[in-house]
Length: 304
Image 1 (cartoon, rainbow, N blue to C red):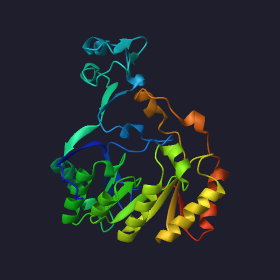
Image 2: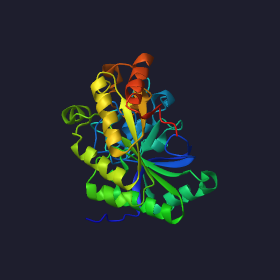
Image 3: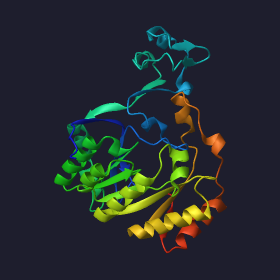
Image 4: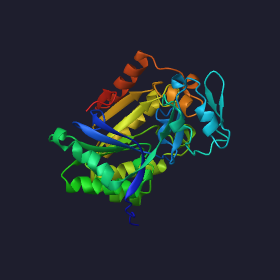
């Protein structure tokens, strides 16, 4: 199988001067679309592969132009506007009617030349370590676009980092790895069934791809630490042993946070964080020490 190159893709953001998405100063492109449905996802706006309507109620001043503009009568007005997501067809006609920017479109099609122009603007700041990172969502969900960005970046001498769940066809992984300098790989759980319960898919393909990635390029593992889900000593030890089996020497532990709460509200979704619970500092330190006990370098939070 060969990836079919594409000259455009769906993104949510091009983040400049990123310092947590790989070595040095980086330009991080967030691609839209993900095959996983992680219960704790902090970037819900990147899951769906299509554009979405984002409504920020704090910006609404009840002007009412959005109500008149909606052909499906999906927008109504109380003290602030309300969107009936079942009626909304994503025509986006409400957006220009709000002078305060309460409505936004999340997700835009960007051409390959345009995204490369954004990346090339930052070349003076990359130094010897910086470069471009593709994140998401899941960059491998748009393999043709991901491959072309990395291919053109390498032609320019720009280092490439793939921030991924590893959930993709091994053929896709193999081809993209040929243009990838480093992988930041999420390992969410070592048990296939518990992985399925937390993300919607089991982890067999992900673990297979982890081995493939590690055989082709540098890999650094990221462990999202979720209370009551993957923070047991058994799972942490198994994750550490798996990392060592790949030749990986560094794990980033990323404790659950609730910074994505407002994103769920703005997308008309229910935030999951109240039902998951919170981590205490001692829980994070215990997890760190368990992983370190296996001889691995450990960072709490992703710091390069």
